[in-house]
Image (cartoon, rainbow, N blue to C red):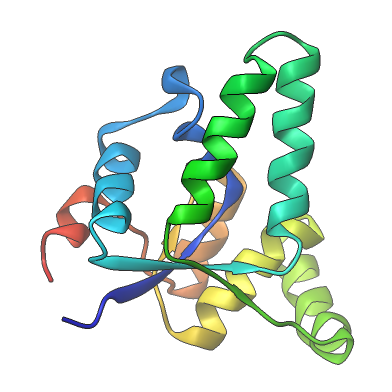
Length: 148
């Protein structure tokens, strides 16, 4: 079976670490990814974004260093692929999308990747959710996970 692909933003991936941020949909998505039914796509700065939040969580004592290392190990075992994005693409595609949807460059990178790959997007970020809906990008939900 060929796994379906989707774009994974950090808000969903971090909910897998922080239980108080998890939802039925994010838990179902983690299971589907872990079972190899779905493959996640991320943009090239995603690991930096993840490490930044995780290190901050350790500093604020939200999680321990050991919990962070365990979670990073879990992420490395999942089918998460980084999609290359050229400087030209960033300037030519991201800037207009960011301006049009009033998004940060990071959130726009998720939106652009979903648009260019023709894949659904998994996000918990309100601004990105609204932009994806406006751009016609399907959103990952538990119902979509089980449609396959």
